Amino acid sequence: MTKILLQLMLITITLFSYEIRLDKPSNISENIEKPKLDIALERDDSKEIVIDKSTGLMWQDNIDTKTIKKNRKDAKHYCRRLVFGGYNDWYLPRIKELRSIVDQKKYNPAIRDGFKNIQAYHYWSASPNISSNTLTVFNIDFKNGQTYKTNRAGKCYVRCVRGKYNIL
View 1: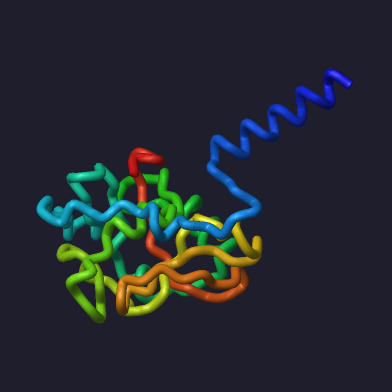
View 2: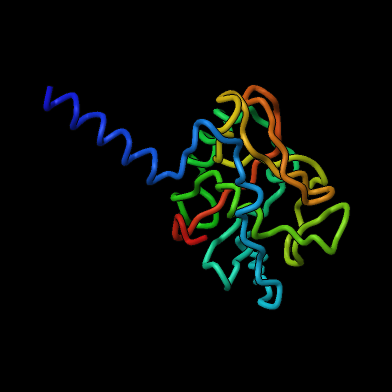
C-alpha cells in the first residue's frame, strides 16, 4: 500500500512540475515569451548558422531548412542526428524557442532579420499539445508568425537548434 501511495505521489509531483493540467485547455500560446528584438541576431555565413545573442541559441540556417519536410517523429530524429556547422548536439526546438525567432511586425516571412533560408510555411516544434489530443503538436507558420496545432503524421519544415536547453 505504501509503495502504491509513493508511486501516486511521484506521478502527481511529475505532472505538476511539467504544469500539465489534464482537465483544462492548454494556454501554452499565452505563456510564450516575446523575443527581445532589440538584440540583433548574428549570422555566420561560413557555417550557415544564426546565433541569438539574447538567448544563446544557435539556429541551423542552410538550404535544408527550406527544402526538407518531415513528419514530427522524423524531424526529431533528423535534428538529433544532425552534424552541422561543426556541432553534433542539435535538437528540435520547443515552441518557446521557435517563437523567439518570430517577428510579428513582418509578414511572409514573419522571421527576425538574419535568416536567409526560410519558407513561409509551418515549422515543427518539439512541444506536444497536451491539453487536447496527444496526436497533435505545436508548430509555427512563418508566413504570419502564428502558432498552430498539427497532427504528428503531417509534414512540416524542420529548423534545428542547439544551445542551453530550457533557456526560455
